[in-house]
Length: 266
Image (cartoon, rainbow, N blue to C red; front, side, top):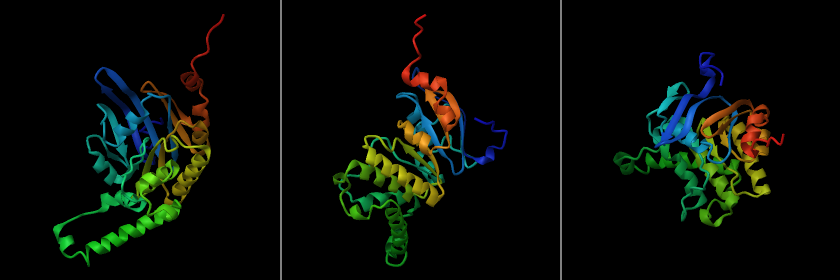
């Protein structure tokens, strides 16, 4: 990562020497990275490399025991996941985490919870105050439904629609929070090729239309090289390399981490 002394203000998200242990396991060791506003930034590595642990450190689930994390110039260390979300960060999860028994529309509306301020006074004057707020939330959700082309399933129970659409609903719910930084944790996991192409298209549409900065964890290297500007590669909780995406993915140490070092037959 470029030095924080070299104009850290251009990084919307900056990590410096982040470490995290679980008992005797070093899950993250001295990880530094910086994401500039408007970038699509890839986070890649073999299974167990520490990618999800790093995302959990950023979003407040497992705060780092060493190092600093700043978002838009303010520290995230020690604040709760809910507070992180209020700062302007949203995420999706590797495994679909939608609410079964609820419609697509209602699942997306839940993404607006960080803007809702329930109170007895609002309830008392519902038809003037709270209803006005609810209408505003629904307008924003309708814009996202239109952007991600979910009109045909908006009233369907979320558990009956295909996985590819469920992933799109989860993306829509994250976008409903109006994040400035969107974290996508393996959004193409379990998808077929057609579904994967669709979700890539919608990620790019959201990036362009909403002016998002995106941190993408993904195993599909064709996706990473196709849409990411830069990438950081982890292995065993440590940074192998960081840089322009093609340069990072083709680094010899990255290739070795994925396929194993060539055997010396000499």
